[in-house]
Figure (tube, rainbow, N blue to C red):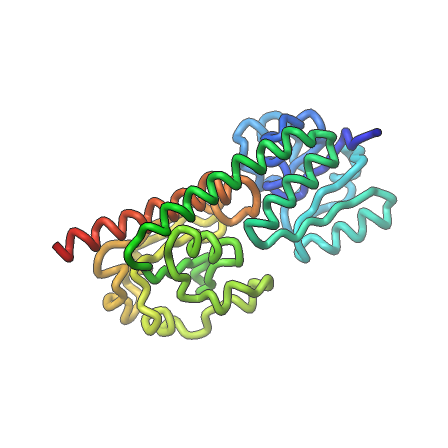
Length: 269
């Protein structure tokens, strides 16, 4: 059976996954937004952005497969298919979807055993976080801010990570939407009304400025800001639906929720 040997990766989680599978030799080119693993930026040619790409740069690395992600890359994937290139467009939006993506990537490069090993490791980390949360006496209300202009709450797997870690996503009703536009919080006062105990921020590749959040009108009454429970999670650790969303993002959220539990006990005593 033949497997793909020259893969153009248009999204960072595809690169991360192939490296984790020990299949980095199959990568012919990467997204310019790739950060994991760090050495990929030095080892692989950058051939695309994320939502914008030039087809000739992708074709120049002579891929036998192009890996894309979501509706935001659907047009470039369509154009590549018209050019005769084979394309696989992933659309994982949950923890289960991330694990399935790993399995499929492993199958594409003939790394079945490595794929199952990685899936098992990720599942064990998910299960450990869930088990830890089961012992908590209460669940904090959590607001995750993915963007600040306009305000936007976290996407599906982020909301799921909050729940797994023992928190309550205060905008779970919006997190289910794939389209970023439908996760916009039209009225900033709605965050005040939902009174999060913890605020997590990850401004999609832009440096988080906590002081600007603290200065928002009326936000001084938000419990999270009153008790200094305001944290940044770096975008590569949580906003790319690949292994790092489990090994980094989920673990950080779990630690923050556990910290809130300990502080709450200290205040109560």
